[in-house]
Length: 205
Image (cartoon, rainbow, N blue to C red):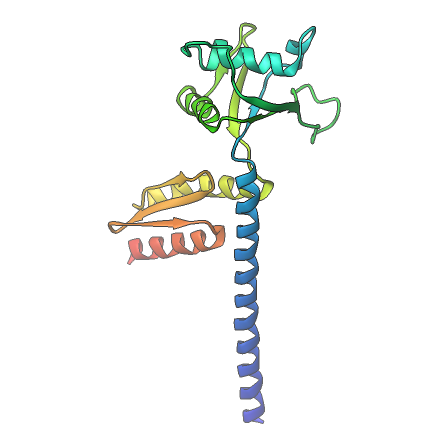
């Protein structure tokens, strides 16, 4: 009887180990697929908060060109010159149709350098103000999974800092943690949480 119980425990441990390994492999595969999708989005930017009324008598591409030339990059030698905009459109509503919040504008740039200049200005300014007092922001375009992972990492940053391990976002969707003189970069949220628990335990010991 004892041998049978022991055999069952061994079998259960093997199943748990195999399940954990398979889950890890699936998550790694999902991360690779997600990375491929985000590479295809690397030349896109999302303009959030731009009033739809601005397109009255105009077009969305004209509105975006003016925002870039007059507000975001006014110091360009030719502010409204060739911005290498390949495609631009408002994304469908994900909230109720009667929402008063304007739909996000998705812009694809043929010149990655211009896209990066715009994104860099947004990081510096944090937000841009229009003549009517409304404000808008510009964000990198990324997959739903990547956006979720980034939000989770942002929530963990303060916890790491309070535990004596400075942390910050790198490459849009990864978390870099400085701990005991070494830098660790995480792409997996659960692994990051596990490491945070380790850091906290070390600090309390």
